[in-house]
Length: 171
Length: 171
DNA sequence: ACCTGAACACCGTTCAAGT
DNA sequence: ACCTGAACACCGTTCAAGT
Image 1 (cartoon, each protein chain N blue to C red):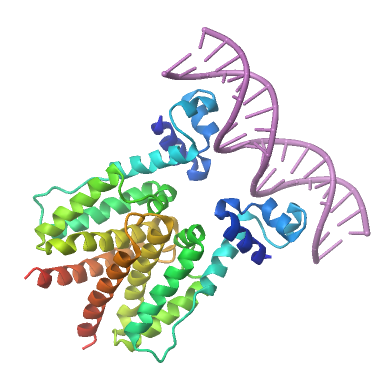
Image 2: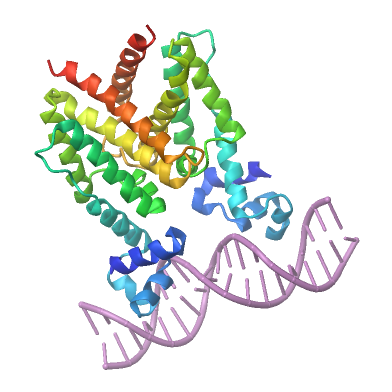
C-alpha cells in the first residue's frame, strides 16, 4: 500500500505522489486507495512514518559519542534518499511510534553519556532539532553552496562541542 | 504583486496560494500573473524572500548574547506568522539577499562575542540551522506536545550552553 | 508592455453502483 | 469488504489573440 507511494516518490518526487499515480502503480483505480487510507494527508503521513522506521540505530555497545555520530549519519542518509518527505518530519508531532523508537535510542545514548536524568529529554529535543535541521538543509537545498567535506567538518566540530558540553555536566 | 500572495497565504495557508486565488485577490485573470512572475515556483520563492526580509534585526548596541536571543525570537515570531512558508527556508539556498542580511547580522554578533574569525561562518551555519529547525518544529507541529514555557526554557538552556561554548573559545 | 479566453492535462474527493 | 465509473470543483500552464 505505502510501498507503492515510496516507489512513486523515489521516481517522481513528493509532488509526483498523487492518488492517481500511486493507484496506477498498484494497477488499480484511484478510488480504491480510499479503502486503505483516509485521504491523501493520511497517505503522506504513512510515507513519513516509513521513512522514520527505515533509519538504522547504532549498536548499543559502541561508545556514546560514536552512537550519536552514527545516528546523525543515519538521519543524513535517509534525508538524502527522500529529500522532500524528510522536510515533513517537522510538521508531524514527534510522538509517532517510529519517532519514539529513534527518540528512545537517543535517550539511552545520553544516559550512557552520563547526562543527568531530568535534562535527558530536553537535550534530546535540542539535538534532534539541530540534526533534523542540518540533514534537511543539506538535502533540501539550503546548504547548496557548501560541499560535503565542509558539512562533514561542520558536524565534527559540532560533535566535539556537544561532547565538551555533556561530559562536565555529568560530574 | 507578492503582497497579494502573502495575504492569501495568511488567510488560506500555503496550499491556498494558487495562481488563480492570487489573481482573484488582485482582481485580474490568472494568466496576468505570468507577466510578473516566471511560474508558481518563482512566486513562492518571492514569498519566502519577503518573509525573510520581514524579520527584525536587534540593535547592535545590545550585548551579543541579547542579540542572539533577539534574533532567535524574531525567527520564532515569523515562523508563527507563516508556518508553512517558513519550512521552505530549508529548500532555498541560504544565499539570497534577504538571507545574507540575516546572516551578516549573526556574523557581526559572533565577532563581537570574540569568536575567532575562521570559525565565524561555521558557527553561524550551525546556529542558524538549529534555530530554523527549532522555530520550524515549533510552528509546523513537531513540538505540538510541548507547551510554550517548556520550549522557552529549552532555548534558554541552549543559549546558556552556547554562551559557555563561545566565551572560553575567544580567549 | 500588459492583459484575456479558451483549452490541455492534470489534481483530490464524493457518490452511487457493482461483485 | 473491496473495487469501479462518472462527476465535481479545482489545479498550473500554453497559446493565440486582443489593447
